[in-house]
Picture 1 (tube, rainbow, N blue to C red):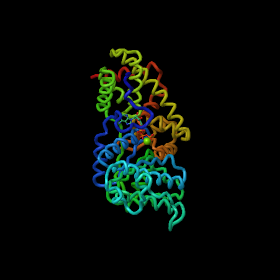
Picture 2: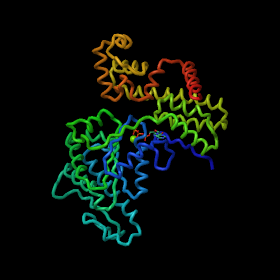
Picture 3: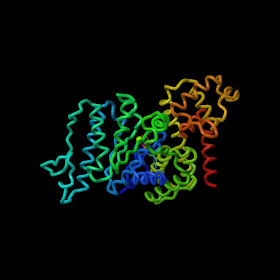
Picture 4: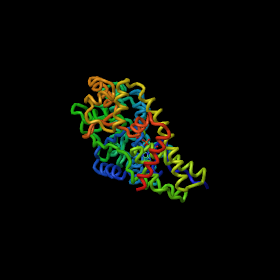
Length: 405
Ligand SMILES: Nc1ncnc2c1ncn2[C@@H]1O[C@H](COP(=O)(O)OP(=O)(O)OP(=O)(O)O)[C@@H](O)[C@H]1O
Ligand SMILES: [Mg+2]
């Protein structure tokens, strides 16, 4: 049988599929699972949040946990939220049944709020949302309470991951819904671990780190960073060895991680395309690998530039201008200096407005050294915008040489 490309791209990496590093984050998740400490995982898009949570949930399921995942991106209304939460509750019940299959004392452990399905003998939940409290808002409160008390009724720890959590802020009733979720989860029973994931850094920070926000300090914040150069190089080389029995020139993995600043999507996509191309030509000599790699990297930069231009189309011209100039410099310590204003051909006042917008939109972050572009893949796309293909190839060649030292 032909070997399969081990590098998963453009979708989440499932549990058991090749996944690079994240040992530290994994340890933090498992630690939180032990102490029921809620976690909020944030990073720019395509950094591997969902993939990491898949690994965590996989590990917890092996330890006997019931694991649930809800993607807020798919929910457009309060009614939709209630239905999805109900579905998750049913899913918990069927996971519970699977775990318990074969257990003789099934019925005796069922809590009063569950019914036994007379045909299958398995516990089911009533889908009826009516009751003493009517209305969708009450239904959300009721279902959240039941979910956060699942560990008590199922006698199993439960992990509930909510992906793209910032989307709850946009659902009606605005402001109130966030408070409802917070208060239901505050009263959760032991063994219930909520995980919130999101890519809108600025918004999530406001939700969890602002003193007046409902989620203030209700979860441990974990920022998912870029993949390490050595970690990725090792991962890439071991995957080539395991699937094709071939070694990569060591500089290739390192240069990939360096060029793209550790951006997980760009790294794995480069490795995936390299794997397919080399397997096709069936040549693995270092000069061939290096040529193919340079071609793949320049194409990818070109494609990604178009992607960022598309997602940035709502930004103002001055903001795009400031963003490009920050990328060109790397770090800008004094954005209001006459020198930087001249580079941008803007007034300091215009730069201030642009910067405010760029920070709000998670395009730029302020670090101790100054302002920089948050996403390293976007930074490289901007930096190479007016660079000719020949110059880019020469730059990539240099990166390979440096990475080999
Ligand atoms: N640890 C990793 N090892 C290898 N590749 C990874 C890793 N993490 C992420 N990737 C790559 O990045 C891609 C995006 O991962 P994923 O969808 O999990 O990110 P995300 O942060 O959830 O993105 P989004 O914010 O768009 O939902 C994956 O398809 C994979 O190619
Ligand atoms: Mg995701």
